[in-house]
Every structure is written in structure tokens, then in C-alpha cells.
Image 1 (cartoon, rainbow, N blue to C red):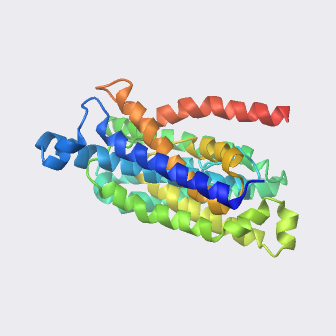
Image 2 (cartoon, helix red, strand yellow):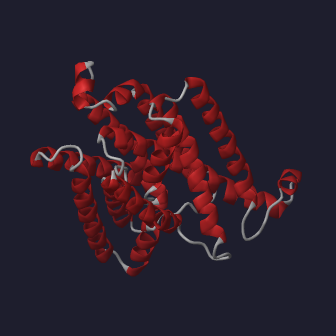
Length: 328
């Protein structure tokens, strides 16, 4: 068992590493930027750093932290290491809602960000409750919820294709590119949009950390200690749907961050959510910043959507986790 002091030092180490990544990442790219030139007021360096790269890095930090923290909560809630917003259909439901908003907006969704965010939140919440309903009706238990989530995600993907079919060529191309997941923003509008939702989700999950800790011992044990399981599920699902819906509205669905980061951190820092949730936020944010850095430098001057990079990493990791569970 890891001592509280050891875990606190590990958390500080993770915070320092994330800070280094956030400081260095904006200076790296197809056009390297010097921090000294940007602070001196060089117009090219200042524009690239302050208006293009720093907002992108901050959005990746918030988005990755949000997805990783949500994944940690879902894995505890559903008692399944493969649970995360992407595999459980939450991100796909949010993407469906946002796609409908984009279709109605007729290409003017950038001016209707709150509407797209509300639609994404509604889609994420509806998908999550549908997963819960299917799992409860089938009586397969918490492990079977993963299969229900996959089914809901596939259904949402099919409906998204139908929405794209109804759109014209320009709107369809925009939707397809958005569905790949991307963090290319100009300015801080999207960052300021995601920030309060990310803080609300992380703060809410942290407030319920003790109940999540009790759930690690099993649902019967948690219920015997006074945990209202139905209320806990409702609150966690609502918090995650709010955060993921807000992120999906601006960045599209970005998968596997919530699968990879919590799974790795539990083995190193322990399962207790008092340290695990902040650690997931830090490492998840740093991980997505690095993925986005690779997305914009691997094929420079062209850029890959960051969702492709996370999927290329997450697919093999998903299979590795399945193999470990089968072997165990």
C-alpha cells in the first residue's frame, strides 16, 4: 500500500512534468518560436505563440484532463477498466447532438457555440442514460454496460452519417473533419468555453471522491456503508456529460484518453480518488498536449487531427488491456 506522503510527492512530480510540457509545447512546431522573441514583442513570434499555439495547448490541457478524470470515475462507477466516455457512447452521443446543431446552423455553428454545447450535452446525457437503461433491463451487471455502450456508440455513429448525408457538400466536409477530433483554434474563445465545465466536472467528482473510494470495495460494501448507488451514478453521469458535451462541441470526439491515462496511473499512484483524480487531470492534459504536438509536427507543414493520433495509440492499448484481463 502506498503511503500518503509518497503519493503526494508523485502528484507534485506529475504537476512539474505537466508544467514543463505546457511551457515547451507552444515553442515547437513547423515554425519554431522563441519565448524571448515573443516576450520582446516580435510580431510573428507573438502572433504564433499567443494567438495560435498557446490557446491550442491550453485547450488540450483542459480537454485531456477532463477526459482522463471522467474515465477514472467511469472505470470505478462501472467497475470495468475499459469504461471511458468514448467506449461508453457518451462522446458519440455528444457528437450526434452537436452534429444536429451544426446542420441546423448551416455552417454558422462557430457563432452558436452555446447552442452546439447544449445540444452536445443533451446528446451525451441521452446516450449515457440509454446505456444505463439497456444494462439494467438486460440484467447483465456492470460489466455488460460496456457492451451496451458500444451498441449505443455505433447507433450514434450511424445517425451521424445520416445527418451528414442530409447536409450539403461543404457542411459534410466540415462535419467529417470535426468528427476526427481537432484542437486547432485561434484565440481563447473555445478555451474560455471549456474551462468552467472542466472545473465543474473535476470539482464535482472530487467532492464525491469518498463515495467512489467505497465503491472500489464493491457495490454491496458501498451500499452497506451508506452510499446511495443510484444517486451516485446519476451525479457522476451528469457531471461527465456536462464536461464531455462542452468539449465535444468545440473539439469533436477525442477517444481513448480516458482509457489510457487512468489505467496507467492506478498502478503507479494507487486507486484512491483524492490523488488519482488530480493526477488524471494533470497527466491527461499533458498527454493530449503531447498527442497534439505530434499531430502538428509529424507531417509538418500539414497537420493530423489529434483524434487520429489518440486512436492509433488507444486501439493497441485497448487490446492490451483485454489480453491482460483475459489472462488474469
